[in-house]
Amino acid sequence: MRVGFTGTRVLRYAMSAIALSLVTASTAGAASVNWPPDSSWTLNGQAAISSGNLVLTQQGVTNQISSAWFNAPVASQGLNVSFTVNMGTPWGADGITLALADPTQNTTHTIGSLGGGLGFTAGGGNPGVKGGVGVALDTYQNVNDPSKNFVGFLSGGTGTTKTWIATSPLTTSLYGTHTVNVSYSGGVLTLTLDGTQVLSSAVTLTPTVLLGFTGATGGLTDDHIITQFSATTSDVSLSSGGFNGGFIVVLLGAGALGVFSLTHRRRTHRSTRL
Image 1 (cartoon, rainbow, N blue to C red):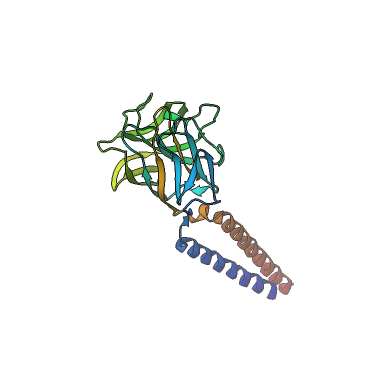
Image 2 (spheres, rainbow, N blue to C red):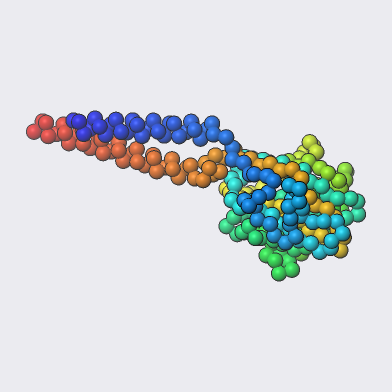
């Protein structure tokens, strides 16, 4: 009987641990991505850090390509990204993307094509982003672009020929400094520019994404500088490095203890009756 009682007690402790884990998961703070960029980011091409800002391209320098990636994948569900960007002065080109890339198809060294490819599409010997979405701020009209001043959700392409999921021409200029917010929840990606929602569309992202920026110039140039940045995700199970896996292990362990306890109690009763 003592064996059965001990097994039951351990089972209760295990179930209590599960309950505590659930409470911890529901109340834990969201994971965050640090800024200004440090060693936790990988810079490629002409990307550079200056005065705590991420400089993707500089005005006056043609044919630049840049990308910058946070080194660790982050959970996509509940992802919320805010940043401030300086898009330079009128008559420049080409633009930037906030990239949400499939970590199984890309690395932190992924970079794309120059000019209208925004550093996102394949070209010039670079693979471009494969799988995922680029949230684009575009200031020059190339092939498949709706205008010379628009935002869009980009899924790939080659060179200046980009593949769009959704686009939205703007009545206000992208040139100058703007505050951008991008959120993903329930399979819907939403882009807000200077406090106004400008684009929202159903988009499929992988459970975790590589988070980064791409940018490029061609024959025309511009500043593309990220001056402020923050990112959080509400999916604790993914952002904390596999809580779900730990939960399953504890649950299976608790179940095994329960079977062990019941088996020993039955055997003890049987032995007493004999």
